[in-house]
Length: 228
Image (cartoon, rainbow, N blue to C red; front, side):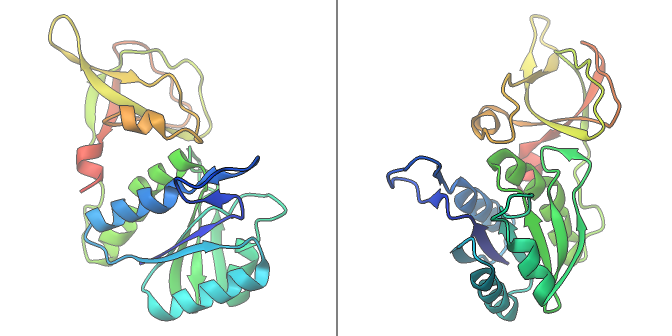
């Protein structure tokens, strides 16, 4: 799998940040996940936000890898040239999923090699890696059951807002006074914040249009299952 990051604003951890710049956490998070799944990772670094540069990097990667995995560049910003580069070399077969975080995810092919374009926001990149990239890799290797069986655990929270997208909420299992486990949500669910995933030990899944009241069962996917 070749791994490419997209964005002139990206800097390596430890480098000084100018206004508008961010650390490239996805490069290390995604590479660690892929290696944990037994994948050989070719790190192609950061593509500049320029159409010709993106086309060259993607063309080279497609000649050397079985799957192209990019982070960032699939939203609607004026500097997001990635989809244009993909279409020049292959095709974008779909763009956007009804999930949160992770809506901008795209899929297509470059010179006959499959491409998955992941969002740039760190939590969105992490979750799409776990629920889209991992199943894709397993299915490509002949595995039929590509998602772990979720646990049904009582919610320790109320989720009153019905959403049009499936929610993947950073959560963990917490024992109550009676020793029974319940699902606790991190208070910060922004797709830009990775700290909630460090606190969590899994994902609470709330389906489209679903409302959850405290003590209702909610589906919980453990990181221990998703990361191996």
